[in-house]
Structures are given as structure tokens and as C-alpha cells.
Image (cartoon, rainbow, N blue to C red; front, side, top):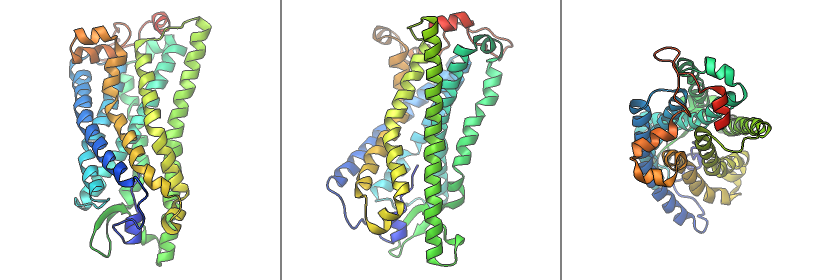
Length: 351
């Protein structure tokens, strides 16, 4: 999540110029965050309950359980972000929650995109190497490997661990923002370090935290499509349909925000000191709200994509989630805890 540092750097709580429509978009973004919080906590909580306690643990259910945990943890922090946004980015919750909330936000937002790439890789392996998947794609293996997306998300969150803190402006207003004053003995040096660090951080976040995972997903889909074309298969399996919907919604929701964040990073100095590119300030609220809304979409996609409309009406929501997130066929166990993938020919036919 991007932290607005302009107020803290300029020592002012109000923008000198508010573009037309900015206030309306600001109010709408608050409403959108409220809706995202309610739907996200309830929907992802239900997915966690179903995949964690009602369903047999398979590779698929463990992957989507982790994705639901990431989305649930993020949406649970939204009330704090809503209060800060309503107070024009001021932070009334103190130093500890300043770090904790934004650490939770970043870990889980990065975790989501890395988990989506992880699930895409799993689908790709099942299609391209079905025999290997049948013999080695087990619950015990995925439980060990799935920590990698979380570790990478934690690494990208390190700048918040190190640099994020509370800053008080001359008027006594408290903000939760980055502080680099211990990196230089003059204001000019501190500002130069701040611009460099924030620019590098923004570019790394865009490349590693968005472009690379989405590229992995695109490559996986290309390989799957090529295999399906060679085999003359035109229908897709339930897990692939669910993954396709999840990836598409993630890209549509997150790309506008990531683009605005990247441009704001590249033009940060001009925005702060020359007052240029005010349109980016206007776009921050709607694009961030759209991005955050993605965290409450997945539970709905599991139900609406995982089965047809008539089945949704005839069965309970937990049962709908179970069918949407289950493996294609009844798995076989190599041990009491390890579940292998479906037979390769069955997997390919259903892909």
C-alpha cells in the first residue's frame, strides 16, 4: 500500500488545491472501503471456515485457503485506513498500530498476487507434467512450498519495518509516513535520500509485486492453452475456470492502481515541489478503492464460477464453496495427510 507523504513533508494538513470532483471521489472511496470491509470479512471468513474445517485438505483447497487468509487479514484492517482517510490522512492510532496495520496490509496484498501466481503454476504443472503431478503433487509438499509467497511478501514489506513511523507536523497533526531524517545531516540530504528510496521502492513494488507475478500467470496460461490446442480440448476444468476468474478480476482491479502508483513514484518530485500532475491525486482514491475491492470478490467468484446458477439456488453457500474449490476428481492419498492430483488423463480431459 502506498503511504501519502506529501502532508508530512510539506507540514500542512490541507492540499493547496483540490481538483474538481476530488471531494466526491473521496466520499465514494470511503463508502467503497466500507462495503469492501463488510463483504470481505464475511465472504473470506466463510471461505476460511469451509476450506479450513469442512473440506478435505487438498492442494487446491490449501492454496485457496491461503488466498482467503490474505484477503481476510487485509480487509480486517480497513476500518483503520477508513478513519485515517476520513481525517485527511492523519493517524490517530499511535506509532505501534502505524507500523502493524501497514505491515499487515502490505504482506497480505503482496501475498495475494504471489499466491495467484503460485496457483497458476500449480495448474500449469498439472497440465504439462501430469505424471509428475500425480506422483509428487501432495499436501505435504504444498504445505512446505506455499510459505515461499509469504516470505517474498515479507521481504517486500521490509521498508515499512524500517522506515515507516509517526511524524508530527508544525500544527500538531500526526501522520503515519516514511521518515529518512537519520540518513542525512541536512534537510537537503534527507530529502534527496527520501526521493531516491521512495522511487526505488515504488519501481521494485511495481516490477516484483505486480508485473512479474502477472507475467508468470500469462506464461502459464499460454502454455496451458498450447497444450489444450494440441490435444484438441476446448472445455476447461472447474479449477481452471475459478483461477481464470480470480486472475481476471485481480488484474482489472489492480492494474489502474498500480499504474497510478508507478507514475506517482516516477513523478514524485514534480508532484511534491512543482505541483504538477494533479490528476494523479484525483485518481488515487478511486483506483485504490477498486484495488481493495478485489479482496472481497474472490468468495463470490468461487460460487458463481464454480457451478451453474440453478445449482447455486438449490444448494447452500458452504456447499457451493466446497464444490467450487474442490479438486476435479476424488483424490487418492499417498499417506493419511498427503493427497495426490487427479489421474493425468482425467486432468487433461477436464482441462
